[in-house]
Image 1 (cartoon, rainbow, N blue to C red):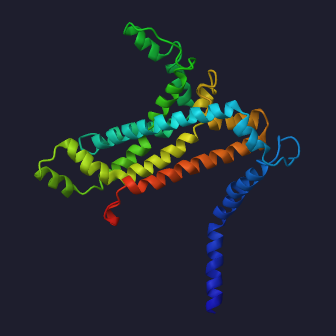
Image 2 (cartoon, rainbow, N blue to C red; image 1 turned 45 degrees about the vertical axis):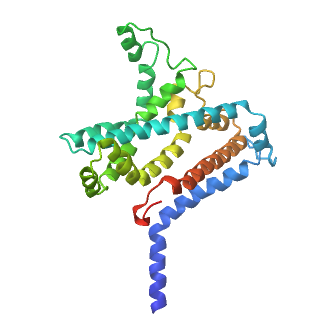
Image 3 (tube, rainbow, N blue to C red; image 1 turned 120 degrees about the horizontal axis):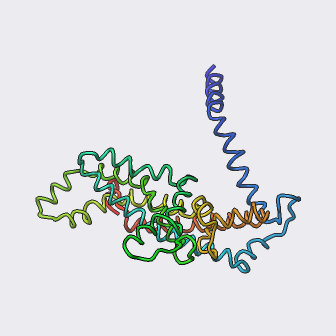
Length: 298
């Protein structure tokens, strides 16, 4: 009787999670396994894949200048945009944590770009703003300065996309705000009694207590930075002169425009290894600078 009851409960549990299991096996695990196999083939979407061993990986790493260009552009983007985004997010979170009137309204206003920032409409608007006849050049002309084609210039196109992504700092801002509200007020009161100024309080209390939140945001934004695609595809399409050819965009072009699915699969696995290596380095470094109160320190 007990065994029947346990079996019934198990079957009920599997029935409840079956949608997730089906989605996991057919939409996640299946494509992962297929991608790994195809990375060792010359599959072109139109004919059967032929096994070619490590040729795709060798060609990518030794004979593909656009791969190196896309990786360089992506790394520059990640290492510039991620710190800037976190700095803006933390600054606004500290401002909103003061409890001033209208904080809820302005928090919502600043969070909206994170919701719509990746949309087609915002990308089009951004392209218009930074175009030859856009608002930025109108402002510069008003100030007596000469405008330029920000998106069409290889020296400035990447900066335009970095600004667009940094502008979407709402999500880390909300997480920072939640972290700030978890810091015990007794710490600030004790620091005040000891005569600490605001700068000392910030670096001696706020930052150490926020390090787990900073670490979380750093991991999420770093991984997200490697995935950037929509903005570059819609605004610059990788140009001019491949100055905004992000890795994900080049991977998309390789797979669906050049129909080199096997080659693109190998690129995807290389990207996975790069992200895994950087994430591992961040986790390894966390023991030196992330403070966990429950563990009594670093």
